[in-house]
Amino acid sequence: MSQYHIKNLEEYFQVYRKSVQHPELFWEEIAEENFVWRKKWDNVLSWDFSKPELKWFEGAKLNITENCLDRHLHVRGDKTAILFEPNDPNEEPEHITYKELHERVCEMANVLKDQGIQKGDRVCIYLPMIPELAISVLACARIGAIHSVVFAGFSAAALATRINDSDCKIVITSDGSFRGNKTIDLKGIVDKALESCSCVETVLVAKRINSEIVMKKGRDFWLAPLLEAAYKDCNAEIMNAEDPLFILYTSGSTGMPKGMVHTTAGYMVYSAYTFKNVFQYSENDVYWCTADIGWITGHSYIVYGPLANGATTVMFEGVPNYPDWGRFWEIVEKHKINQFYTAPTAIRALAKENLSFVEKYDLSSLKVLGTVGEPINEEAWHWYNDNIGKKKSPIVDTWWQTETGGIMISPIPFSTPTIPTFATLPLPGIQPCLMDENGDEITGNQTNGRLCVKFPWPSMARTIWGNHQRYKETYFSTFKDKYFTGDGALRDATGYYRITGRVDDVIIVSGHNLGTAPIEDAINEHPAVAESAIVGFPHEVKGNALYGYVILKEAGEGRDQDNLSKEINQLITERIGPIAKLDKIQFTSGLPKTRSGKIMRRILRKIAGKDTSNLGDTSTLLNPDVVQEIMENAL
Ligand code: WT7
Image 1 (spheres, helix red, strand yellow):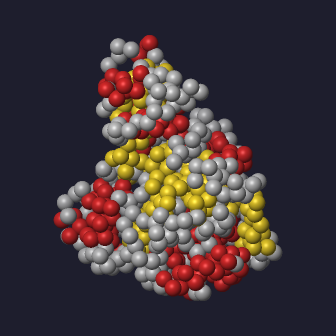
Image 2: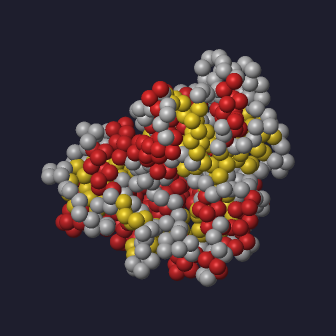
Image 3: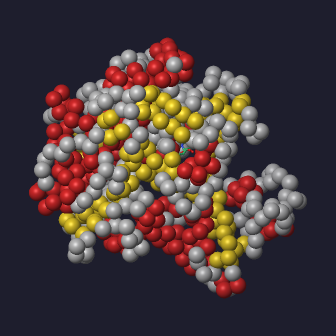
C-alpha cells in the first residue's frame, strides 16, 4: 500500500482530498500497485445509484486467492498465515504457513470440483471457527464458486432459509463444535435443516469433536479422506472483476434475511487497503480479530484483508470466558498479539470481571486496539484504553456494515486523534453525508442526521441475491442518489462522526444485527399468540436487549405466563437462534397503533427503556388507552 499508506494526519488529509477529487485515479493506483491481475481493467468505475448499478475495475481478470496465497509463496511461504488457537487452552495451537494454506486450499478446491461444484455454484459453509472454515472459504474463491457462510450459531430453520434462498448445492459442516465447556451438534442441525432443502446434493463433514453422528449414504462424506486423496495444486479460476465472490446474509425489516452479494475485484481492493491502514499492520506483526468468520468482520478482517497483505491472522475457536475470563489476555500474551480487534459487548462483559484476569498477563505487545459492531460507550472505551492499551495503544472505533464490505469511518492509528464514542473520520474514498427528514443534505457541522454515502466505493454490496428490487428499495430509495445506511449519526464541530444507532427496525444486540420482523414472525407462530412487537432497550453488557410485547389469543388467556415466556423463547431459538431470545416479555391486551394500523414502536421503545417522561402526543392513536395499560404493567 506504499503510496497511500497513511502515517500521519497531514498525509491522511492529502490522501483523502485526492480520493474525493480524483476517485477513479486514486483507486486505480491502489489496484495497480498492490495486487496481481491476470488482466487489467478497461474502466475503473461506472455507476448509477438510481438503478442501482455499480461496476468497479470492469474488464479486469483475477483470482482473489492468487492475491491472498500464491503471490506470497516466494516471499513469505514459511510465514504463518493462519494461527489457529483452539477452544481448549491445553490443545496445541496450529501454525499454518502460507505454503501449507495454499496446499490445503487447493486440496479443498479439488474436493469441491470432484463433487461437481463449478464456477458460479453456491456453497453453504456451516462450520465452527476451525481452519477448515477459512480453507473452505478460500477454496470456493479458488474455483469461482460463491460461498455463503452461515454463522454456526443459527438454528436449523434459519440455516434452511439461507440454503434455499441461494440454492446451495453443497453444505460444508463438521460433526460438532466446541464452545467453552459445551459441545454443539452441528451435523444434527444440518440434518434437520436439509429436511426442507431439496437443492443440496452433498454434505462434506469435517471431524472436530469425534461425536457419533449419522451419515446419510450417498449424501454425506467425511472430509479428511477426500482431502487426503486430493491433488495439492489447483489452478485458480480466472474471474471477472464483477463476478460474485460471496453471499452473506444480514437481517432486514422483513422476515426474509437479505443475501448481500459481494463481487471480486472491488471487495479485494477495499478490504486489503483498509486492513493495512486501519490496523497499520507491518510484516512481523500478529493480528487477532475475535469475530467469527460467519459475520462480515471475519470475512474481511480475518480472511481476505489480512491474507491479501501477507499477514499472520489468528483464528480463535473458543469464547472469552473459558476456562476463565482471562482467556483473551492469555492468548494476547502467548502469541504476542500486536493488533487486537473485538466488539464493545465483549469489552463490557470483560470489564465487569475482576481486573486480576487482565493483570496476570503481559499485554505489552499490543500496538493497536479496535472495536466494531455497535456504538462503544464511554465507560467501556476508557476501560479498554486504560487496562488493555495502557493508554499507549490507539483505539480504532470502526464503523461499517455487512453491506459496505469494509471499514468506512475509523481513526487511522497514530494519525487521527481519537475521542471516545466517535468513529471519527471517513477513510479515503468514502464520502459520507447527513440527511434531514425532508431528504436534504445537512451541510454544516454540529448536526444530527441520517447517515448516507454519496459516492461509490469498491466494496459496496452489488445487490441482494435474487431480489434487486429490495436492494434498491432498502438502500437507494429513502434518499435520492444516496446510499442509505439505516444509521443515525452526529457530526461534531471538527467533522468527526459519532454513530448514534439504527433508525430502522433493526436492533443491534451484542453486536449482532437482528431484524424485528423475523423475531415477531417466530413469536406469532406460537398457537397462543395473536400479535407481537419487539423493541430494543439499553442493556449493560449487550448494548441493547430485546423486549417483546405479546398479545394472547383466547387460547392463551389464563395460561401460566412464565411457561408461555419460556415457550416463546424456545420458538425463537428454533427459528433463529439463541442470540435472538427476549430478555423481557410483557403480555398486553393491545399495542399502540396509528389510524393506518402501524404499530408505534417509538412509544414501545420508550416504555421498555423506562423513559416515559415524554411520550409525545398519543391522542391521535387508534387506541390511546392501551398506552396507560402497557405503562402500568411494564417490566
Ligand atoms: C450495523 C451493521 C460491520 C461489521 C459488524 C456489524 C452498527 C457497526 C459500529 C460502530 C456504532 C456500529 C451500525 C451498522 N455498527 N459498527 N463502530 N459504531 N455502530 O455488521 O451486522 O452488518 O451491522 O452495526 O448500526 O449499521 P452488521
